[in-house]
Length: 127
Image 1 (cartoon, helix red, strand yellow):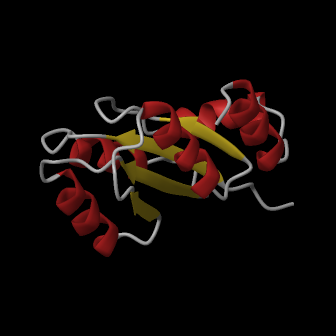
Image 2 (tube, rainbow, N blue to C red):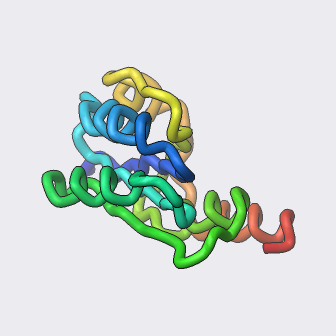
């Protein structure tokens, strides 16, 4: 059975000085089946340009940008909605992730249908 895709979700807003390092830390995972979903919440700095440049260089990065600032909860929800993985990890845009994080932790989490978990979060928060 092939290893499942894991989504690393990075919601961001105005992190031009940090977002590049955050994304690069996600890309060096030793677990090979990842996607990095980055959702920019209409940043007013050059965050989107940094994200776009990195995405042009690595197809595992899936960048999305909100036309207007939708607030943090809806930005987080969009990251979940855009994810294709069976499991996901939120990586805050000012944090880093250890290269072996998913390799060491993936087997602890049961594989659920992604839609089930995101819908329940949306309902609970009236989104």
